[in-house]
Length: 267
Image 1 (cartoon, rainbow, N blue to C red):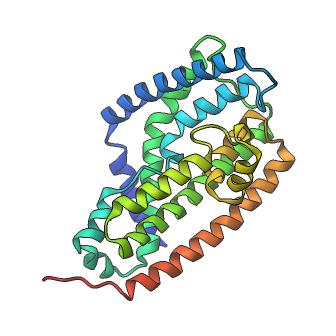
Image 2 (spheres, helix red, strand yellow; image 1 turned 180 degrees about the horizontal axis):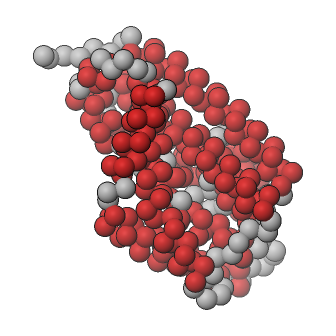
């Protein structure tokens, strides 16, 4: 456990060095958020029927999505891990006196956490200071905020568990493009990154609720907005814990299996 905490700490410090890139990301995500809000504002102004979420809830959802993008985007990847797998340098990782799965898991958590720490606060401050109707709002209650925080971090771990399955699949496919494109496309749609899940057709919502992707994006954000009440949020956190256990066990077992089949040529 000490080894995993050490790599987490080192990777976190390393990630916090990229302040210029983070500031550029804050500017991009701020204007991207404004653009999205304007699109929804036009949609709500001409809606023939009552939308499933209020405009204010959607605005909060968008700002949370932009602020915690590094937390929730499945397309963010670690090129160092990909290069280790595709180049054969994975041999060095196999020599470590600790589990590769735990080592990479801690590394990926730290990578996303450091990125969020640099971008989240400046973007949220800007979102709280801009005028209505684009302004960010506080959650309806302290319980909603606490459940949002717990759900967000559990969602981060669920997302990293899914990312680990993507990297493990690269041991078999060799080329990283296929795995990244397939998982990222499916995950972005069913997580609520493109549109919140309540806006989807009922048959597509059933698929989204069956898959774990929404647990990292749609669920914590809708808890904050109040669209998911506290009683349902507690059930959602339990579902997150169950999915997290299943994904980690599956990933750990899969990593053990592919390690037995790894062949490194050269020397």
